Amino acid sequence: MKYRPYKTQEDRLLAGDVRRCTIYSGELTESFYAIVIAITSDSVLVRRLFKDNGGTARYLIEDVGPTGLEYAMFVDSRDTMLPVGKVGRKIGKASKTDMRNIRL
Image (cartoon, rainbow, N blue to C red; front, side):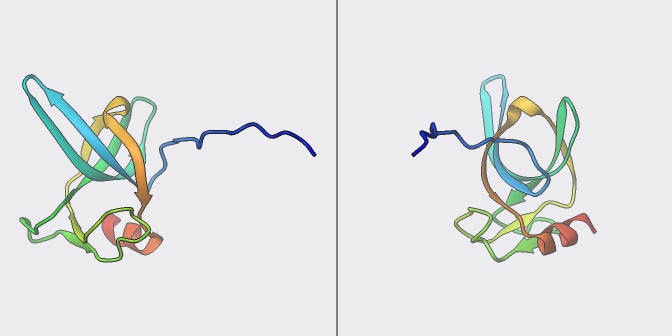
């Protein structure tokens, strides 16, 4: 029998990941959930998730099982560029259908 050491799961950034992001600006700290849209060498393009539909063109994610979220959330229609260090741990993954609908 071979000994296999415990390996921690890689936390690679991939498009479609649902992640918790934190932005520190002076005294104000803002945390939010976001879906990764695209990755570059020094920044990440994300779309924020909201509990309510403040905009008219927001897409609703209803199937929250694979995303790791506790309730349905709305995806912002605008992209936000964040440094790689501001993107937190992976919570879940958006489905292929949701990603297709988000990118439209």
